[in-house]
Amino acid sequence: MILTELLNKLPSITILFAFFVGTIIGSFLNVVVYRLPLMLQESWSEYAADALRTSGFMDYAGIISRDNNINKNLTLAYPRSHCPTCKRTLKSYHLLPLVSFIALKGKCEFCKSAINFRYPAIEFICGVLTSYVIYRYQFTWMTVGCCFFIWILICLSFIDIEKKILPDFLTILLLWSGIIFNLNAMFVSLEESVIGAIFGYLFLWAIATIFKLVTRKDGMGQGDVKLFAALGAWVGWSSLPILLVLASCAGIFGGCIQILRKSTKTQSIAFGPYLASAGFIALLWGNEIKNLILR
Ligand SMILES: [Zn+2]
Image (cartoon, rainbow, N blue to C red; front, side):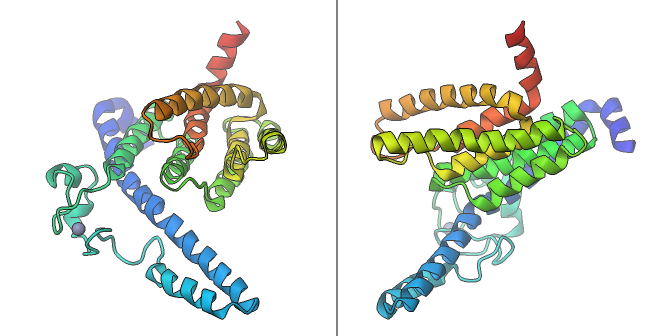
């Protein structure tokens, strides 16, 4: 293959190019992270308004529909990217990943409001991880699978950080794609993958249910349960214990930092990013970690 030859002959240039492509993908992931929750909010509000209308509460239904009008017709492609503060449409050079943020010194060119740091962060993370995956698996189907896996996880992590939700659209997509990519045992056998999804769901669901029965509080969102099941479909059931230990340790550490900084006491902590990071480690280094433990 030409691309593989290029990677072997000019590794640094190919990796740099992969990083650049990764930042462009990251730029699109930013659109997903910003717009998907708004699109969901719009459809949920419409659903609530319909329910109120059916129950005879026309006034309340009207208020919801009116407030909801702002995000009507919003899709991932329409309207064109704009500044969330002044609503002016961005110029094409504003869309250059990383470069535009640096050139504009992190501020909107029109209204000078600060650009959310999430934009360069996602572009950079996506660039680094995409180029690493290409370096590791070269130009193979494993790269395609692994890139798809990390791109969805980046979206889920940042949506969870900002909105404290893990949309079904992404978790279920991740679950089915995990099973599909493992049909020919790409990362784990199909059996490992399917049992991983079932075991992952049932295990976290049981923990969440027991926690709720004992404390009468929601300790864990259903989104975390579905994400864990989806990760099980990718890494297989045998890597799930390692994944959960890693995510829990990182979650406890992150939670302590958040409490020490007094940024939250009553607010819930987003567990999705910890599960996602642990899932990434388990997919790429799960076997090495398992061998190390067995030794
Ligand atoms: Zn602006």
